[in-house]
Length: 296
Image 1 (spheres, rainbow, N blue to C red):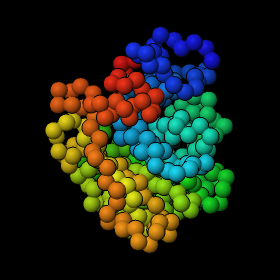
Image 2 (image 1 turned 135 degrees about the vertical axis):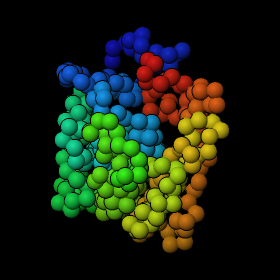
Image 3 (image 1 turned 45 degrees about the vertical axis):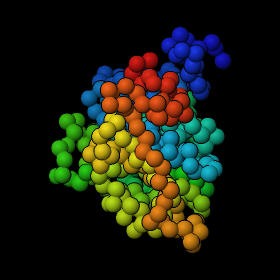
Image 4 (image 1 turned 60 degrees about the horizontal axis):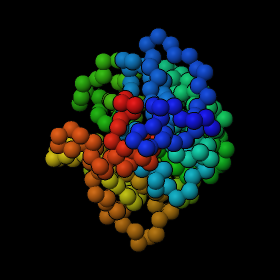
């Protein structure tokens, strides 16, 4: 491997992971941004952009799924979660499903740019459609399903929050094509025996997310809140990460009403500086500690 460029170093830290082949053209209205490690992602300058929620969902799922050969990302948007999973699990096959053609096109560019077209398959369709879910299982190459399913469902019912300015970003915010319950039902169907479903939702809607998991026949085994600023209550502006498994795959005595609850993860200190907790997490997905991708 070639010697890392100066921008790949930070106070003795060297950016980890493979260097992508690139070679995919940036078009008008698009940006090419750091995602993790050396990998980058194509996004619309004024459309849906990947978020901390996406990266943390992938981090949480890949951290707690016991063994992953096949992974599936539901409602994958521009591919941010799927790419993070593929980067963290270099031997895994990853399949995604996304309903918006424009987002699938951007994800395809990112997959080719980062050199993983051979093991990341993009399916264009609605995750609520049974025939689409059958295509996902076929693309995964194993009738048993997926060892890890991830999902970042939209947080707000239609009419309960302002829509995004760009139409491509609206379904990422509002429940245009399903909600957390739809994601949970799809995950329960697609999981292989012993598989893990990792998802994220608004902390203020924790009860709703837990109910969706239980109604789908999933048992919540682990959860962790994420506070975006120290001192601000989790319920006001935070998110919650969840890991769940099919009820048939956990011991009968395990009570899903009392999962392992990890201490909240804090992103920013009260003064706005990076919190040491998130700095340690960033090392796990290829960011320099304390430095965001936009500062590299």
